[in-house]
Length: 396
Image (cartoon, rainbow, N blue to C red; front, side, top):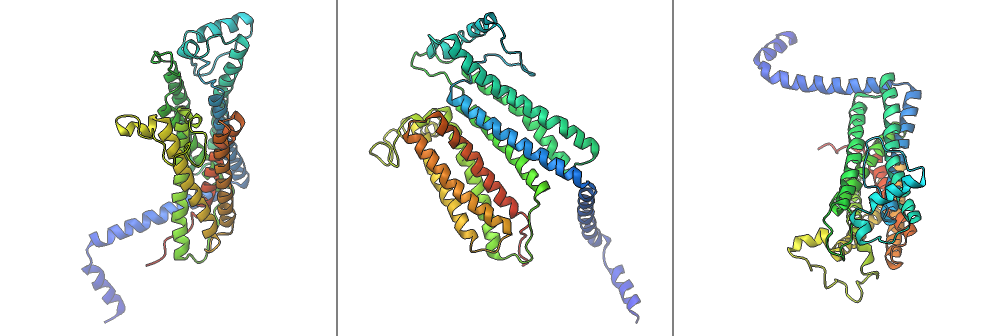
């Protein structure tokens, strides 16, 4: 019997339902890979170059917003502007306009409970700080939107990149609204007692900073993807796969530690127990669970929030140091070694800045550097995981 007849009988014995799913999966997978590959290759080199520069520029702008936002918080300037306009407003130009702006500020809790007797010149300083932060945010929107529209029109975005651009645009818009929602919490008439300290909600502050970190991470990851594609390895070992998983865990922990720092800032928790490594003369402070119910302490008790931030930071340091040392014993893409070393070094610098900020009673310059350092540490963690993105699972 010929081979052709055998093949014919075998095919007749198979059910169509057995063939279609496998064929469909193969067709869809190949089509998707081919479409993305072709779409990416069709983008001219000049398009890739400018899209990469734009993405790096957007990430740098968001980094700047985090730094300015930290300075605004540290100089207690965030509640100086008591209204919000979508496209901003013209700053006061005359002395009469400044007087009106100052009179409006005097109607809110921060002035009544904390800043009575403030001079007009002192008010101008905090007003300009907040104004600069808001205008920087609007500049980010413009810097993102105009080139994005041009690149989209030129066909310099892949299908996947188009989706990411839409996500980033939505996040930028939500970030502006969330910023005002945060400020509004400090302007509400909920501070009745003379001992109350008018401040924004630490929950909204954490959400605002967290969204900024997410936006920054997306921009940086895609900038690296376009400009410095991750290198590949011909042979992937089991140790490399374990290291890749560990690097992602480290990145997530660094992000979590940064979020806990937002709670520290929101509650001014850095102003309690300015000693290290002990809390005064104790390893565990006596008022760590002073609030009831106990769960409130983790987000509302300054002592507990500082204690948690110390623990999270110490663990992050251990993870980053382990990644730096472990990377030297594993076969990785060449740039991954540099990224791991940078992550480990930055983690030590960040912890040093945090301890110095605490011991010196939170000077503005050091505190701002510490907050910026958290974003730099996250940046190196993102870079490391990006360099490992092509490590695939080992065949069984």
